Length: 219
Image (tube, rainbow, N blue to C red; front, side):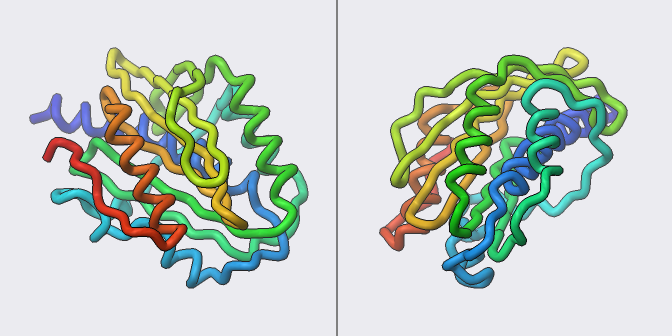
């Protein structure tokens, strides 16, 4: 039981590192002149009822993150730069017990192209990262992920993070649908590409107002 609690705590720390990357993305894409209101944008995010059976809202808090290197540090620096006021941002997180987990962030605002390009430039050049989360040293690597395009344009990345002999994978896709910029991350011990693709398609279809359904993730 003690080992199970330790394992869950470590997975939580690894997930916190991913949440950090998601937060940096959201911050880096803030821009003024949003054409979508906050409530309308929130309605376009995946709801818990859109998730497969057994998933629930992930509202757990995390510990502190420090000592980021690589693209995580670059994202922190980009987020710290002066930027236009955020007018519309919506973010949700879900999990099936501790893992797998899914998070989605949507942002709407005119003039986001430059910030979006800057984030993509950071991710495209990212190879290795390390940081401290909840007192645990986490190291990993980033690579491009082959994923069929979603939305008007999309770019996908695979992140592998390890700590104390435990490794988790994070699939991340950045996409654009009209005036909305989106980011979806899927965390699992070994993320299944078809499941992540199904989640990405579901998320984009909901934004576009098309029929959508939860993927079959094996539960």
